Image 1 (spheres, rainbow, N blue to C red):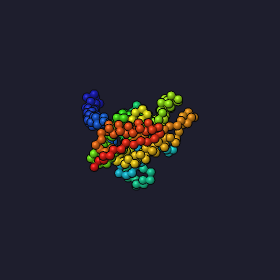
Image 2 (image 1 turned 60 degrees about the vertical axis):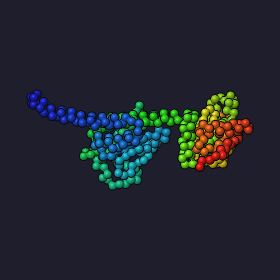
Image 3 (image 1 turned 45 degrees about the vertical axis):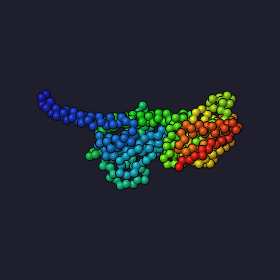
Image 4 (image 1 turned 30 degrees about the vertical axis):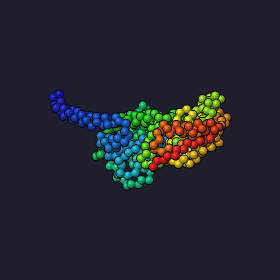
Length: 357
């Protein structure tokens, strides 16, 4: 065959290959743009409803890794039957998904049935093909989740081109999910106190304003408690500031143990805490305050083999929706000062006669 004949044969193949690349890029570009967001729901929808089309996969599932518990949590899927909602990485039986996460490497399996939940005995035939791709989502060498793709349309298994595309996507999706986690962490840090994990001073006032608006609209009253650790300076001077920090954390835990889930506790500043009790009577707030005083005083803190006694003084106030947040905090703080003047380790109350109607 002469060079012209060879050129005539190869030219259509070259054109078809170029056309396929151009088509792939036209599909890939908008997906990459959509993945560059801080919305996990949107990313999960792309992973389950759009990425599978790129490699002609029928089914997809997305898991997000909780690093604290070493658990994979199912975020989204399009399977018509049950699959695992939670997968522990600490299982003795190493499934392909766990192996993929631990190795940080993509796995192509010939047994898609492994993606089913245990005990789901659906008859064979749910998958048109046995092949599945298990792709850990990686960013900066850390796994943030897993994308599973199963059941290749009109083929027994995924092609090398499919696997290459998934390899690209798993890093793009991993980067997006990592960005979301970093953003959420930053948002949380901006709203919470680093030592105790309670909300900070600014977030306390934002929350209090919302509760007052709710009170104005629906009626009711709000109780606000101000708590101060007695003699914290003496603890710092005697045992050091690390002991003082331990005392603050100890008291914060006692406070959380004495309030309800609907109540909001904050580190108001230094050795002072504030708690918002929505729609709470003054007697209920006083009961909670007295319980805090008792819990703190009766349970000494262990510090380097020593028992350090702690106590708190508490000011309690109840307010209607027409009181400003600043005034409410100030009045409860006045009650706290009265508790300090009364000898500490006690509760004093500021009561507002007027109530919301």
